[in-house]
View 1 (cartoon, rainbow, N blue to C red):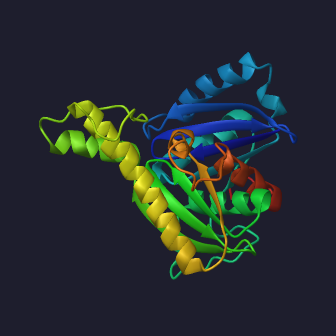
View 2: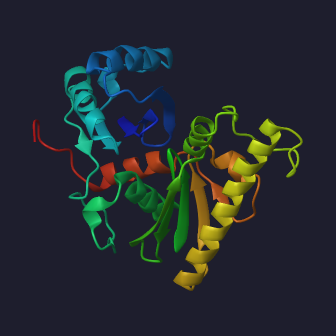
Length: 260
């Protein structure tokens, strides 16, 4: 089986694929102080809960945008699963061109989303990832990665609003019942939700106009289902898109030698 690890700024997702389907997907908060042993105690307990032993894990692939999280995750793979992990990085065989001024600057999560979007849904496409940041990634008809846009994530915006304005409370994101809020919390929810809907619709419209051809619009990330309810621009939500990208990059590249 393939163990997939997607380490983001907010959460680290561990997922197990048996070659046909995902057997389990588990999340834990990102904490760069956490050791490989701590990950192991938590993860092995979850694997046991679904009747899977660590010996059934044949390969491990790790993708991360948090450099400090890589060392304990690599040690987890080596020490607890006896596998040298494949690290998703620019030097791998991605199978598509990267049309950027500075390819080394792009986050690997954005490339993984582009890879999965093209392989599963075809292109051209815009992939919106509602994570710590809200990213928009453009994939052409040949699967080439063409850049995109980066905006603050919804939860970052909520926290910034709360901390910068003394009288504004911290709120939970949700679809408001009305555009006109009759109290502070309702007004904030309206501004955040419909403001991000406007951001999504505006950026997607501009991308399509610049690209000059019909494009699919896909969304992933924890808040994708909620935001998709507020707009017709998003055609499909795929919560596992980044995980699929990691699965696909593992299929394209051999397992590295121990201690490479």
